Image (cartoon, rainbow, N blue to C red):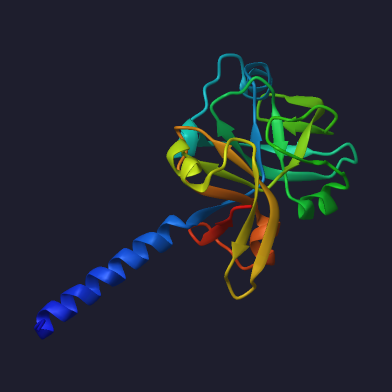
Length: 213
């Protein structure tokens, strides 16, 4: 017959295993505020030829938040100041804002995956050394999840698949058709903008659950 100590030990081990299994089913949230990605030409125009971004905070997948910020200006001459730049430099410049931002800017960018800017909304950028006007490049980023290959395999999903995601907060929510991005440099994280975060009481570091189809 098991002793009390053995029974307690067995119960603790069972609880730890249950928690580990539960952790496998959740993904952390990363809330993305409005930000800008720049190419080499546009960085030179805004900050001076040969300028290099100053790293403020390391992000996932080799990205970083820079110390530098710019002002974004819509064709209606409505502006938002201190919009942070994310590095490293890209092939094409891109501005990501929220739906709430569009009310101030009086523009209507499409909801798109990052990098798909063809036919998106125009926007001007103003920096300390100059300004530029982009005929396209402003989007509202779609909801998406970053996964490493091993975890994606466990879920049985692959790059660019769509999944549903359950939010269990004080405002329970179900997000449909969330794009999955898979790369070996990723850690498990779902990116949403500030509008989605506020709507369902989420903050960076909270967890959500992937519902595989």
